[in-house]
Length: 489
Ligand code: ADP
Image (cartoon, rainbow, N blue to C red; front, side, top):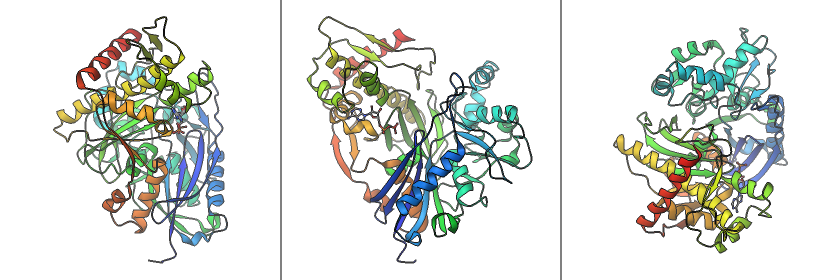
């Protein structure tokens, strides 16, 4: 192995920005650069991104972090990306035929409702691990095939954002995706680990337009030397949440991570057997031939943004900590932030938010605290569902909750999360776990890291928050949350 190959380049293509981070051979970030991404809203509930803008931004970010450095030092590229977002392009010209349809886009809602009415959800769940929802790629691709001129042409390729970046980095030599991204399309069979003929038929998708599916730590081709100044192999690809799970070293069944950004995504490793959720969570592919059960909450950090921008009770997000700290114990006060309906495990798109149990002595501090509490209670909702799924399948118990994302800078929130869930909350030193996961995958492929053990040894704890509430008290407060939820449904 060439001793000069001493760093890793991670591309993190997210919903609101595109970033590149250069890591050293120890997994320490050296340089990073981000470019914001324009959000396009063509209609009510529709969200699109410009694929050419995404590719240009990725290229700019990579070139910026490599600036002044010999690109030959980069051992490998790792890619992580916003999942489910879908596009089609012409293989001959390399041009996208339409904007990418973003995961948040709801244009497939009526189609999903119709399929549900036909009683197809159990079949879809059994094959793909997912629920019938426009969030996933299948109805987005179906829309593109129906509405975009030429989309059914012989030379048309479908891909999620990882595929688009791989295609462009390899100058059209490789049309591939990884298992974790494939598992979010609703077209990929979790058990057979292949595109599912029945699902392709249901959505009218020609198999020829689909990318080759490769394990996350695999050979995705080589970036063209004209682009970055050297021929760099792409050796790791994973969807953002699975990459975060890898970056958090969640390698054993029962290892669970929860990311608190705008929303919250919790994934528990369930090992090598395909899991089945009986509690309305999703089953999904992880890296390294493992699987996970996943639960998502739409509103986590977004409730803090709302308190700041709409209600004006906070000058900044971090101020939520000092206000929550000085809040009185407002018995019976619950904030249900169902601004856009409720996610897992309720899946109620009609539900709307509410603040319940208001009394004369409730002020802004108490409301802020109730909002942070809500993120904790929603996490407990997910953990309860995960626990039931895991125990029904005879799987390991949940261990400590590894957390990351912007909200976990808030110590009060982390402690409250431990108190209200009854699990220890572990905050790592590096909370940029998504890009780190992609770099680790690429680094494993390039031989910079020897094994998962080697990576796990690098995971460093910043702080452990231990549960401080007695179980009866925790359960009593949670019962109050459940009745608040019942009142908004
Ligand atoms: P995303 O990747 O979804 O944009 P980030 O991981 O950057 O999100 O986290 C940003 C979110 O975290 C915002 O919604 C913000 O309100 C929230 N946040 C940031 N700092 C704090 C804090 N100290 N306390 C509470 N919430 C915070």
